[in-house]
Image (cartoon, rainbow, N blue to C red; front, side):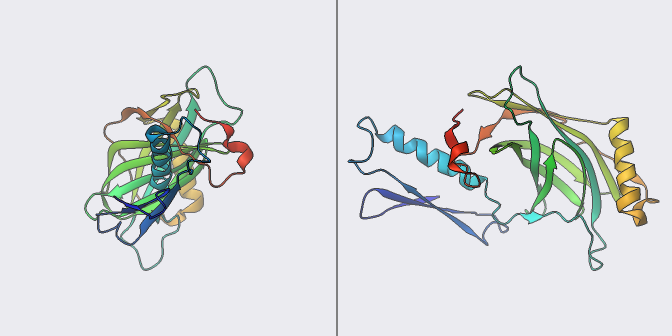
Length: 248
């Protein structure tokens, strides 16, 4: 990351350039506009500016960048990919909640050998998803959770082996979301459940009949439990200004 001060002394342009091979195809540019002395509050200082830089950095981290969307349909030219089936659930674990229930929007996974990043789109509070991925060891890197117009993000650190058989069932990934507050946490629990396996098998029969007779290997990520900080991404660029009044 490098900062370049413009002659106006009021604009800082941060250029975030990835170092991994899969990240060098795009540089994210974020301009953070500092208020001029006449516009900024009298109490505005280094902390005020730093707050906006941190908020902007969190937004940049949430951008898709060079992430590849995991395929739900396998092209005829790519026969070596493996079908990964996962049930993803989002629930509130605290005693308070917003009017919008939490939903898992997407999960990002990184292929350890190649560094290629894949985005698994979910967009639901209890969904069974199936995507085709190249075989190998994966790091489960990040999760995005929606609550209506509010978007939160958490870094993850589990690993998953996607190999051995044409179909891999990775169990139920349950994201327990804390009540809205400062220092909000999310608890990730990955378990095998009979209901999830039945739903996975039904999805394969209905949507991937050619794989219905193939053996399905059950593999859980490791570690199977984790608790991490859930950051609310600000600003909310996809939503009207009305919804940007909430600052947890």
